[in-house]
Length: 320
Image 1 (cartoon, one colour):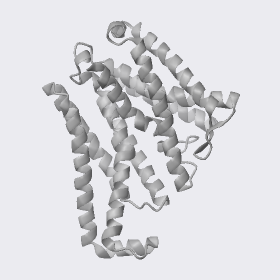
Image 2 (tube, one colour):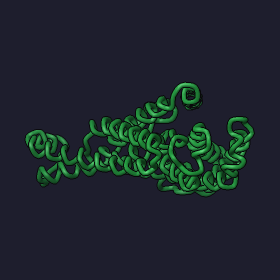
Image 3 (cartoon, one colour):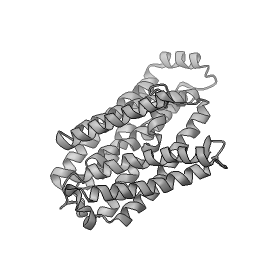
Image 4 (tube, helix red, strand yellow):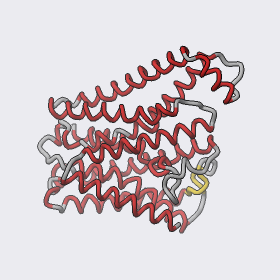
């Protein structure tokens, strides 16, 4: 328990430092942070899939998120400099194009290097399968990693630069609106997960999904949602009463914010359960041992993987 507390304090401290750097220095420190997390989480996902015999190209799981990060940053730059929000849509299309091109090239290389593929099949005990089919399956399994967690998680790059994007309702607002949005994205899963655990341990009761996550209770889930909404209302009020964010009273009403938060708690819970399903199939308790007391990085950010695209989309829709 002590390790978990110490790790949590360290995580909060790192985030605090990154927010200070974002406010006073540059947004790009957070971008680098997100890129590193995406690479590590993708590596852990690669190992989980391999444990379920969904073999993949592990080296690509580490390298490719960095390529997507660069693509997203370039498109964010052009979206801001040309005042054309459709550059974000181009970023998504380019990401998928890069996935397909990378995997097609990898597939062709595997067909050329047949001996190495045959040796790998022998090592893994794969029989009665032609080389092309084995290589194609590895490419498909790697595509899973490109999408989850890398593609979804790197939506945080767009969230980080939300204030720079040419969205109608945000055009006349200070660019520091992205601080408020990013803060929201971090706190929703944090509050939901923390108070779900505390409420569930106090009240107990029926399990939410006993086959997927035996420790989660219905009472804990309800408590996590309610406490998250209540605390996020307090967060809105705190920001709205800070001189630099007083525009929230007129530009971003609390009722709209709490709707986004309420739906976000459900997304966060779904993300947690989704990773639990993967770990069940891999027959492991944690995705890794990177964070003492928490397990792997994927265990720590599982709720954030779906939150990232949701928050971007939710605030985007509101800002149109």
